[in-house]
Structures are given as structure tokens and as C-alpha cells.
Image 1 (cartoon, rainbow, N blue to C red):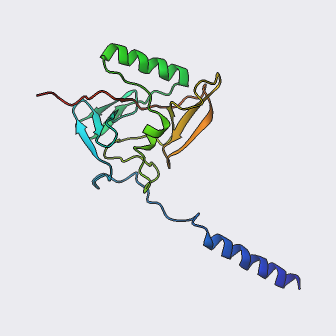
Image 2 (image 1 turned 45 degrees about the horizontal axis):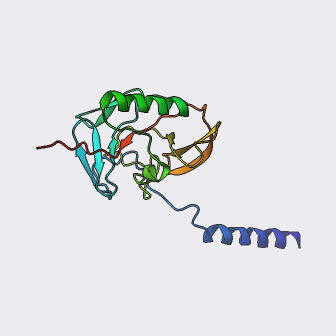
Image 3 (image 1 turned 30 degrees about the vertical axis):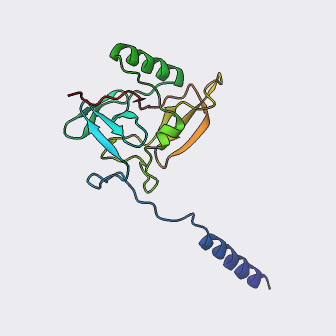
Length: 181
């Protein structure tokens, strides 16, 4: 009798697990270098890309690193608290005369490839992306102790992270940085 119950329980559990899409295979995108992105981006000079859908211009590399013509980011990404990251971006904007800022959650998610993970960022457009939480602005940023980030492994966001955590960050602007003729 007990053996029948165990067997029946195991069959029920297997049926439940098979009906879930929990174990579906999502491609590892860490090695994608030549496939065209399904996103509409234009690579500009100075290590930035323009998103044709949103009109945003993104730095291709995390802050602290620099894009080089071979298609890589060199240097060490800066890991900062949320408040220090915001101050750094504000100072960068003032010194460069470009309105750089941290992206919003929605903006950061607009560059996530849902068909990829590890990282979920297109490695052709955003090379050497860290698989890490990245600071973003969100509805929780007025909190004294909590802020938002997007995890680049698969693109999930969370707005209950301690602002004192040290995370990398990307920068974005609404300014057009396309060369003028």
C-alpha cells in the first residue's frame, strides 16, 4: 500500500514538473558575437550606440571601462553605492556637457534580450557586460535605504536593494550623439 502511494505521488510530481515550462532552455549568450541583434541599434563613434526604437544613446561599456575599436571594453568597471553612482554620473554629465544619467528600469529592460541569458545583454552591442545587478532609477529611489537594480543574468529587476551595495552601472542620455555633417 505504501509503495503504491509513493509511486502515485512520484507520478503526480513528475506530471506537474513536466507541465511547467520552468526548465525550458534559454541560450547562453555570453559567446554570441556575430549574430545580428533583433534590436535596432546604430553604433556611433566614441563607444556609444543609439537605440532607434527609444531614441536613447547608451554607453557600450559599464562606467569605469572604455570601448576600443576591437570591440571590447578595457579597464575595471566601477562598483559604487547607489548615491555615489548618481553623483558620479552627474559630475560626468557636467564635465562632458552631455546629459548622462542612470537609466530607468524600463530603459534598461529595453536593451535586455529575452531570448538570452548569462548575460541577457547583446554582447555585440554591450561587450564584456558584467553578470551582476546594475543600478537603475526606479520608483523606490526616494527611499533613504533602498534602490533599484536590473540583474543582467536574465533581466530581472528588484527595487528593494540596500543603497550601500556596490554595483556597476551603465549610462544613458536622451541627447543625440550622432556626428553632424
